Amino acid sequence: MANTLVYLLEGKIYINLTNRCTNDCVFCLRKDKDDVCGQRLWLDSENYPVEEIFVQFDNCCKFHHSLVENGHMEVVFCGYGEPMLKLEELKAAAKHIKDIYPNAKIRVNTNGHANFVYKRNVVPELKGLVDEFSVSLNAPTEEEYNELSNPKFPQAYDEVKSFIKACSDEGIDVVASVVDGYKGRRINLGACEEIAAGLGAKFRVREWIVNGY
Image (cartoon, rainbow, N blue to C red):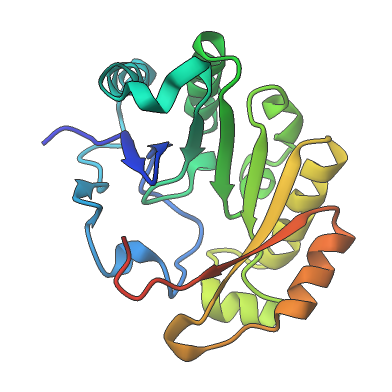
């Protein structure tokens, strides 16, 4: 079965770059199912040419004209893994999209660990390619973050906040998000919103979807 690198959800084009992640969040959709709206997001191989993303994206646009009317569309890098772990592929795909559809809005949903992974601030490399980052803040404290996100390295929570600030400092729109209501658990949303504001980010609450999409 071929990799599903591009899929549709709620009128937007999504790009599924990898199944690898530096978190193991308790509420992650992929723990409970293999697909999103019938689209299988587990990859058969992580080793694919970047051109395969281009082909699947172009085919998607060809067959779904309503998504690209007047050159406007929304593209989201988000799938069954952390998209920033495929940084070069992400940059190449975003450039491909912007070259064809300069008015496309590109968002990256990320856990905010990229600067730790690459040992440098990668945010400036994405200016002009990414219009918005949605960063999973997930909790108001490190202790609660670790409990919910199960990061694979220490000080991950500080890395998340630093990444949010780096996006804001670079002038890229950034939203700090939390998942609320996981199995009835409620987050201190006021504290999270205050943290987001202090980092120069907007704030978004995502209600946990029991059965996923």
